[in-house]
Length: 382
Image (tube, rainbow, N blue to C red; front, side, top):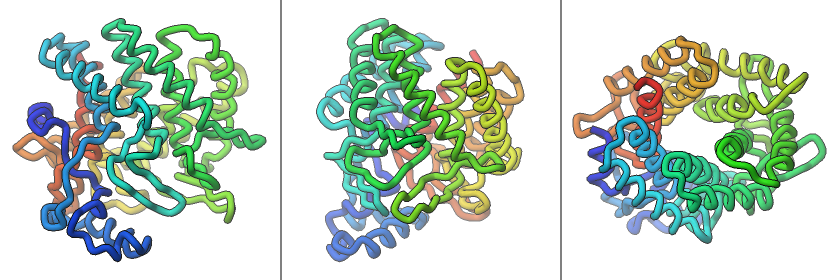
């Protein structure tokens, strides 16, 4: 159902953060950052879609292309369907063409606190998701074009987005971003490195591995006593920003992927950190139930991105460690999400409160992540 919907839409749709791009949006919202953020947040949570009124156009996110392509790759691996192969090849061509000069996840301008994204800004999310997608494309098709694309982006990542400040070794969100550390993106970079490294050899991997170990040490050092990680740190004010949601899953995925490449005391420390992180993610964010807290300790709304990441993280934990309880929980989350947040037309809703649902079909935020999550889970079950 979901695959039919997104293919009919040609992977084009609205985004939770696109409200300011509308042609009828009052110019004051674009000129005033505070008013703009209020308007954006209102459109994000309001359950009625105002985008047609404000003439916000649907678009295609390169991040979506990477996620959809990876979903089709998993489906093709297990089902061998020619239609899936043809669609993934098309998506890979689009992703390659769209990210040749600027590897950007956002096709519209977005400005937050010390955070700017847009069609002319390369961001680490698009880079890492592209690396993972091209790596798996090489694994499936054995076409070195995809391997070279992954290697090229990996080299760009380490040459341009790595920051080393004493014991702080991390990756920047964008080339322009300064004075702000977003922790989960470093974990995404670790996972991207592993995806390429497991498929081929390269003379730079030894250097990348040593840097990766320093990134791992830094991530472990920032973990709270209860297993949670902060979202970001602002160097100017020396303050952490806590946003406990699906980003916890990103960090677990990165450390979990890098764990087999560690040894000695560092491996032991990372194992302990992972154990605490998994416990927090499972028992606090999900409360051992089928849906995640929105941003712990805030329970509602249930967010589709949280749901998708839960399926992905527990599926990856099952693949890495073979513990059936991880697989059963991923299935449990998937079943609840399908039952409670999928529209009869096939797409997934964005938010769910006890008596209200936001049914806006965001393509990147909801459909791309859920298709990836369900396809990856399916690949482990067949």
